[in-house]
Length: 192
Ligand SMILES: [Zn+2]
Image: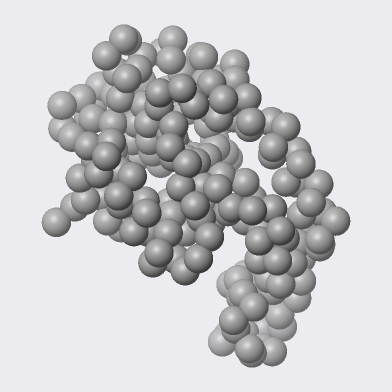
């Protein structure tokens, strides 16, 4: 079994990659940033018991968020399991993220997201397309700065031997191919 930690700034495409992994790999569990730390602890402990030896993949997304949490996670795992932690960091240039997010529009009615390539004015459901306050350029830049400050120590913690950076730029299928190649190096096989 492997534990894959996904790191990536807001707008780096982490959600898309997470969905791709869920559809194409034997993913055992997802944890998201919405889960409280204690819940994550329980899930990690439970899943480790359940999937030990089954070759499944446990994905952690949104945890660990700080260096202390990364240390805590290592302490929860015994020595050999600790080595099964792999970290995939989606790297996207800040300017690309700002471009991506500031051109994003969201349906006020159903919440579907539309990118710059969608030339429509109204959602398929008939709802109005609006720009979220969170997606304004200044807000995006401050979120990126906060992410960088918070998460850089986590990335540095794993950098020596367990982390691989993958470019999140380009088309989704190009990113997916890079992710596949990286996971293959980690010994994580795609579902047939
Ligand atoms: Zn809609």
